[in-house]
Amino acid sequence: QHLGPAAHWLLDNAALLEQQIEAIHRGLPRSFFRLLPRLRDEPLAGLPRIYSVAWAWVAHTDSSLDTRLLKAYLRAYQQVRELTLAELWAMPSTLRVVLLENLRRLAERIALTQAARDAAHRWIELPEEERSLGALETLDAALLGRGVAEPFRLQLQQREDELPVAAGHELAVWLAQRLPDVGAALTHQQNENTEDHQSIRNAITTLRSLDRIDWRRIVAATNGAMRALARSPVFAAEREDTQDQSLHAVERLARQSGVAESQVAEVLVDLAAACANGDGNQRQAALAYWYDGPGKAALRRAVGLKPRRWQGFGSPTWHRGTALIYLSALTLLSLAAVSAALHQHGAPAASTWLLALAGVLMMGPASEAVVAVVNRLISESGQPTRLPRMAFKNGIPAENRALVVIPAMLSNPTAITALAAQLEQHAIANPETHAQFALLSDWADATTRLLGEDQILLDITADAINALNRKYPTDTGAPERFLLLHRLRTWSESEQRWIGWERKRGKLEQLVRALREPDVFPFLALGEISEPAPGIRYIVTLDADTDMPPGRLRALVGVAAHPLNQPQFDAGRQRVVAGYAILQPRVVTPLPEPETVTWFHHLFSGQCGIDPYSAASSEVYQDL
Image (cartoon, rainbow, N blue to C red; front, side):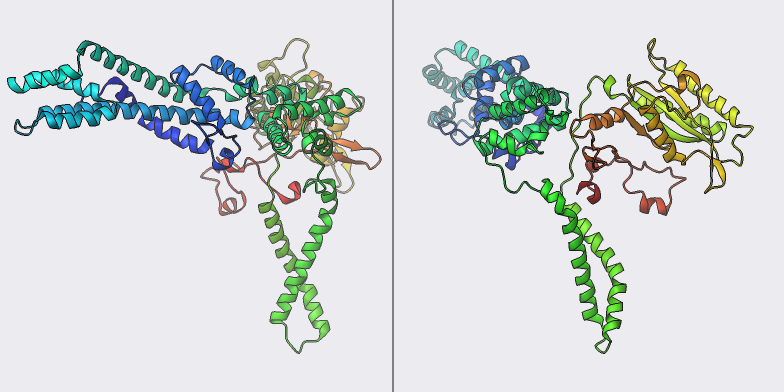
């Protein structure tokens, strides 16, 4: 009837408590819960060890949360017993569990206290013939067993004056034996209410703040394995999802070998550091080279495990045989499909040569169906692989300078204005100090080497690029941010016209060569706007109608710059034997404008707009 402030806190935050229960189910799935070490001794036998850590924290801090104190607490605990990575990652969800249990305990106490007071009200309001001290004794004994006899007696004491004189005197005598010091009892109840109010407020405030805390920073500061891995320069510079792959590998090796995670991490970092400081190449400085690459056997030996005979589907042996297995499967399945069709529908009297001819003709459509089915099965069975990537938190470094180019035709002033606006949009979305944005341009095909309007179009384009450079100036002495790389036409025998040599492909080939050999520069000299900065390492090519969302340039360069992705060229074999020389990012079709949408667009453009489920896509020819 008269809820206190503590109860109002619970009622006002009921929706938050429901959300926390859902968060616990998401954060502690059964598969993850099984990885947590359990306690053997009472009173928490059978529960995860991290539960006792969280329980002690909540008990000694009255459900409040101070991240600096929490770090010190976790470090102090691990001076005696090391916590695993899984336990530390489970800490926020376990804190939610303990805090909800604490709130449940407090809510039950508030409800019982309220029920005791309601019982006192009901006894006082009974008809006189039904009101007796015997019933009161029974009720008091029951409430005493639940620990709420004191608020029951205090409520009776407050209303004893409402009873008739004789009944009030009997109640006063009864209360005098059980409530000798009313003032002390009132003070005790007020203190309990204040403490409950403070505990509930702390718990709810902590639940609200759990999602705002950078738990990764807490784990990095308190876990021995993460501190050991942070000694690797490559690991420290990697993006968080790539670092997580290394952490999961350390967890797996620790479980398999029985060695502590921090020791496994030390071994892994020492192997990478020895190769980086010795004769090893840059790839060996990456941790993934050792736990998921050619160094896997050496790492397993270093932690006391035997190298596996079967290295998995990523092993070189498997890759050498994939083509044979794939083509053999397609051939056998196609032959089986044709044989089944001929057996089912072939004429009994048909001659052998006629059946053979029918079989040969059916191999085409049958193989098409088989290829589609096999590719679908492989794509559905294989997991997409995310390439490792660098974080570049402070922007693209100078040693990884990039050039973004839009191959385009200078056809008319309107198109030139649109190209300049597109170039400006890319630069605004990706404001990198060590990146330039260029139009890689040609004139339209012509019957002569030069046309009268060529110079006019070139001047308009140069003015647009110069205007962009004035609008977005660079530091003194730094190269211009926006460039114009334009070339003259050459005669094409096949086209019988003057065109840009090899068109788009030719421009990119000449650009790559010009960046490698500055003495060979096929583009017109237009001053600073035609001078790429020295040391450009990556070229990002965009079509005139392709957008590059904010941060994507840094992300692409971060993938290409990772040591495991950098191409290793074998001069003898004349091929890239490791890493990637060309990366194709995912391209998503935007939502169509109402006036441009067609049935063709619906059928062939795929998913448009917000598509959160395709961050990692699988395509059989690229993945396998």
